Length: 236
Image (cartoon, rainbow, N blue to C red; front, side, top):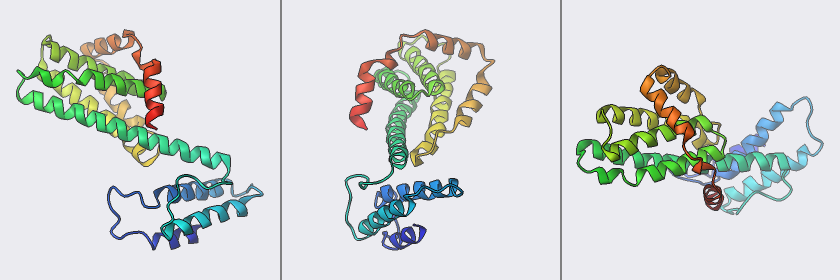
């Protein structure tokens, strides 16, 4: 299997485009299979040769430019499940990172001219959508931090903030922490809990932030609505 992967890499474009997807699914699946073989080395499945042959043929076809619309037939269900989970994790993380970047840029623009509060108007809806995805994915602390950032933006938009610059710093740090949290997921890996641990540890004793978290916990749980669920399914 590793020899087949090496042979396929020789056909990849060099340099590989930064946003390229050439053989990404085939390689990711083969790496998962290789990891599964190593993890169960003392108890290998009876159909191992058949499974590796399926992947080797798939890799060879991809190296010759035969793009596949999905996973090859006959692949084991547990490998298919792992691949689909990884694909969903990557797609979800990309969408959220894109949304957080939009919010971050708008807040930065507003910080330069605080009379332009219209820049903040669409942001709570964007963050409500993000927190909905986090809740659906059972990433509740990420959802909690997203709700807190949303509350900060809402009070800046309403002009009720007593310290707008302080709120901007909190928003920037919160969004940055969410970005670091999602970074591994862009590669299909579980998110980095440490990024949220650091943020909450720094601010857990801050009375105003505790109040924000408390407010975020008692807000109506729009995040769990069927609207968010159907939107997530339609995207991915």
